[in-house]
Length: 206
Image (cartoon, rainbow, N blue to C red; front, side, top):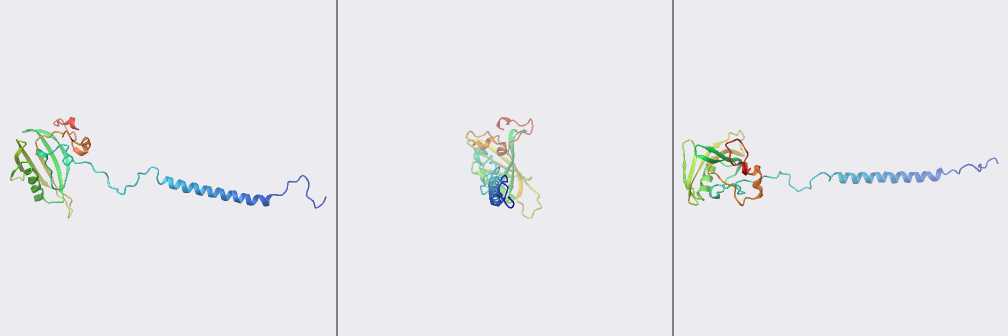
């Protein structure tokens, strides 16, 4: 009949579907937002180390302080230094230990006094200085005669207040690795014993 809907026509549901569509869109948007928040939170932690509050690199050990290859009598140096190289060489006096340090913060006289004091405590009480600046320390350790020679060289640093002030080369009796040396002594960057040539004979200790 005119004015009436045909029996085979589907009812108009657009008014009902529109709110449902809006709800689905809102739920989808909320789900996407939640996924972005979760991904951002997880991404900030994956692949990163746990914060420790310290961003300084881990420092290696010290062959003298750790007791890897002790100085005669177990002497300990009382001035600030860094071990640069260590090892045994064969010279005119036979095998000797050649230990190179850089001293920092203090002047030359304080280093000389520190060397004399450290070795005097273990029995090397005879200290002499040659014209070329070499310091010789002699005495007995555990009943055996021991001689140590130290050559000091100032480092020319243009900084008004340099940290590294100079170089000390110590000529010492050959030292064996301490039987109770800690695990840090397995690291050549701790002992500073790097192979340099055929004159080295401490390769087993590397």
